Structures are given as C-alpha cells and as structure tokens.
View (cartoon, one colour):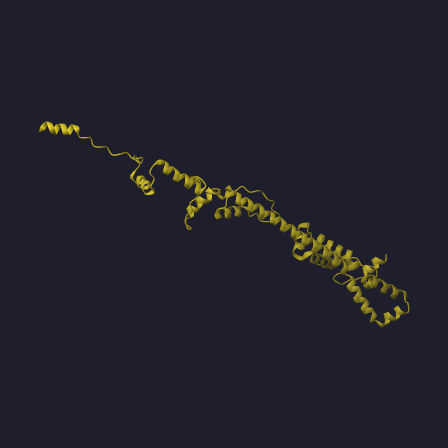
Length: 277
C-alpha cells in the first residue's frame, strides 16, 4: 500500500506556475489604468498613444492646458509659453522720434502688453502700426493746418488790401518789441490760427504808434484797428457821398477832391487796380 502511494506521488504531474503578465513590474495604479483601458499588450498601448498624438497634432510637451479664468499664475505660465517676456522691459521695440512737447508712451505700452499677456511678436506689430498711424494723423493735421493758413492769408490780403504790408510790418514790430521767438510765435499760431495771429500782431503793433502813413493824411487809417483797409475805404467813400460840400467840389472837378476820391477807390478795390495795370 505504501509502495502504491509513493508510485502515485511520483506519477502525478507538477502544478503549473501562474502565467506572467506584460504589466508585471508596474505599480498597482498603472496596472489598474492598463486594465481599464483594455490594452492586452504593449503594442496596443503604443498604438493608442500614436492615435492620440495624431488627434492632438503635436507632441504632449507642446500641448497647453488652459487654466481657470481666475488662475493668474496659471495664465501667466500660458502667456510665457506663448512668447511673453518674463518682464515688461524684455519687449524689444523699435525706437520712434518723439516731437518736442510730445509724450513717449513706450514704457506704458510695455506694461500694458505684459499685463495683457501679449507675445513679443504681437506687441511689436501693434506698436509699429500704432506709431505709423500717429505719423499719418500728424501729417493730416499739418496738411489741414497749412491749407487753413493759406486760406487765412488769402482772406486777410483781400480784407486788408493795400494795408497788408503796413499791418505785416506792424506785426513784425510787435514781435521784435516783445522779443517773441519763432517757437513762441508758432505756439500762438497753433492757439489762434494764422488769421488770429496776424490780426493780434497787427493790432498791437499799430498800437505802438510807429506805423507809417499812406499817402493822404486824411485817409491814412490812423486810429483804425488795421489801417485803411478796403472795408475802411468803402466806409469813407460812403461818408464823403453824404458830405454836401465835398460832393459839390468833386462834381465841379476840384483836383484835390478828385484825387482823394480816386485814392479811396483804389484802396477800396485793390484787385481791380491790380488787374488794370
């Protein structure tokens, strides 16, 4: 009986060892992840990753995960990865000429761009386009200013007539008397316009009492704001037509009366006189 038992033990097959798994060596969490995914072998896992990369379009190290709206630090990291310098001073911007009296907002722009999370490329494009537009606007303003100055001069030449040179000389004396340099005169023109500047200069200059008198003392324009202008000459002609004594002399051909009226008409209609020459 003992011999039969021993023989049976020798003839019985050995118990099979458990089969090894390709996930052996992984920690419990990783093994559970693989099981949940249903991957049967490494090839399936690799294929799944390749498909994921194709779907995303870039490697995982180039994928950005958007943080919550109120996560300032998280957004800061996103902005930095997208090309924002670490500090506002890190933006490299082209130098621009700041006109006299102008304000350079470049430091402010650097701060604003950094706060908004703009990259170097975005900030450069905005900065260059902004300054280019400022130049265009400045040129437009200067062009309109020049057009208005031309219109003002033409208008005043017509109004002042032969008193133009006298009023311009009076304005020059005003600037010389008070020592006004070109920069100051330019500021006055910006504030008053060319017409306002010339009228103010002529009025003050004539008030200094040094302006010369045109021919004919009685029609010199002395005491008038801008001298004997066409408007003043026309008003004087109107007054004389109501003067019975003068008109009597004029109609009788008195040389002095004829010369005075002729002179006043030339002052009142300078363009007609100029065209007849």
